[in-house]
Image (cartoon, rainbow, N blue to C red; front, side, top):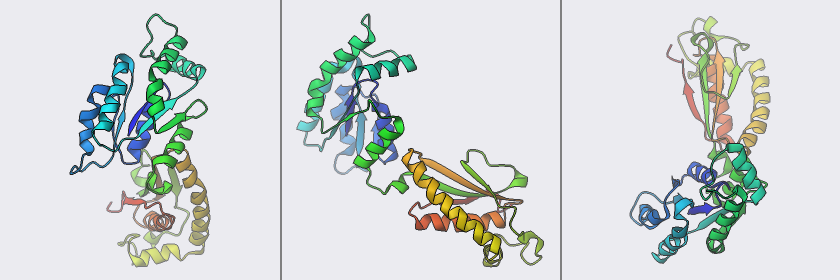
Length: 278
């Protein structure tokens, strides 16, 4: 896949999305290197899909010949061309205060139109053209996922379920924290105290409580609402943390049960118990 198009139209963002989808992505590649780097995905290599993000700048005259040479090599090539209206690109450049690669003494709008004219033959050869004028980064991601994802959307977000103990401190870099300290505590049952939430006896003690049943039912409804919304917004990583006092009993049992529910929904979460050995 060769990602090209007008500067400011979203080439790098498109590269980020394809990287999340499992492509090997190289950004800001000089066109002259396109045929050489494409060898990464040649038969017999471990890399199946390569995405090359190609800019213009001083190399604009090399883009079309490099693409022609790549296609002549027999490689399976698709070109994704991103464009946007001139006034939209002007606003984007003004908001970021970045310099357009073709701007010198010319006004920004003139430089954008010059680049548009230069790249018109490349656009004509493109397999897919996306106008990003009215798309924000999340909408662009959604469009690219629809076009190129080989997995179900819920698998595009890496989901982690964590258990922890409040007495050991709140975990950092988590998105959702749920406090499980309102549930009956197995710590106060002598025969359960040395066990953990991974042991059937503790699990049954926690999950068979009527309060736990109601909590998990409502939590299932909440997560079935939240997780698809996170996927649509383009979130790549989500960590949900369950906390109890020590992080060994209640939070572990609840984390395991929530992970089972999410696995049934197709999210395939990773489970980690931060304080189970403390």
